[in-house]
Image (cartoon, rainbow, N blue to C red; front, side, top):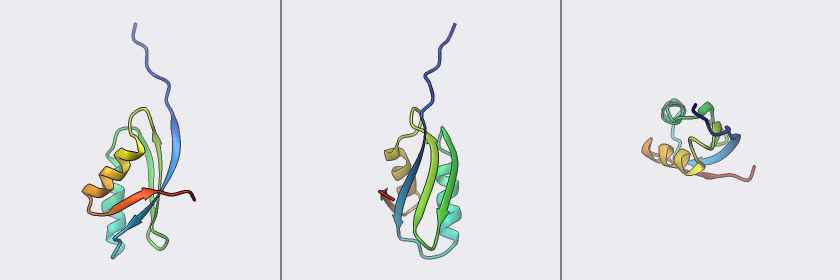
Length: 80
């Protein structure tokens, strides 16, 4: 019998820097969306906000920030 860890689904909001065009949105959504445990990714170009619903047992906030960095942008957790 196998047991699985309970999921920890959370909504994380990040602030990003380096957006220069709307195609940046697709690039970030694609990169972050490939991470395990990520359910939704929504990038708001006008406000530089990235909202991610994810399972923290599979993908941490640091993982999200790293994926955004691999896409060529800087991101950090936001309080709002």
